[in-house]
Length: 195
Image 1 (tube, rainbow, N blue to C red):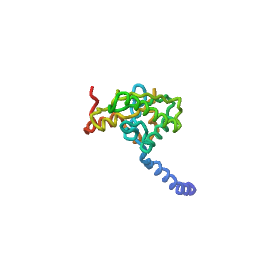
Image 2 (tube, helix red, strand yellow):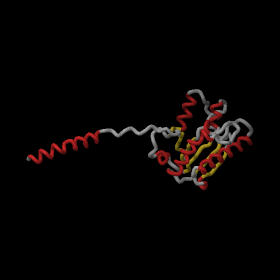
Image 3 (tube, rainbow, N blue to C red):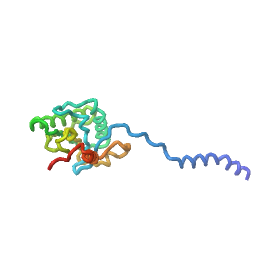
Image 4 (spheres, rainbow, N blue to C red):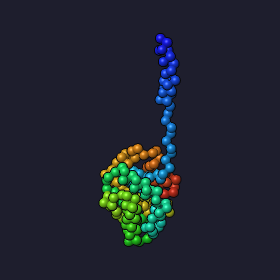
């Protein structure tokens, strides 16, 4: 009886500590500090929209390396570790300039992103590029912000699912591309595309 009492007194702190540890909530994960990627599920796959401000100026196809680097690093990491699907890079332009100029710019912009991703370890045989000039605007070209949004390259992971790309990723790493566009429209910074 004495042994049992002594044993219970010796084990009580261990049992109490174990119970208390099990009741504590784990420490909060550090907040995500990387680039937030606008993303959406589409019928053809996962679309990731690179922010236009980080990419190209009007009439230019050269990348803004300092601004675009973190986004391209993040996309290369995602497409090499989360998917093995083909990647379509689709270049777009605003309506400033001639149709020929915008076609050339959109082709070159898609190719520039392709080169940048391949330089970051994305297999070249997975990458396809195409330019669509100003034929597929996401916003009206009547404002500078709208034109900036239309100067873009969309990264499309063909036949992929958003849940595969976002699984295990930190909170705040992605945003809804359409919610962002709607917010800009609601704030009056962008006008919808005229039909």
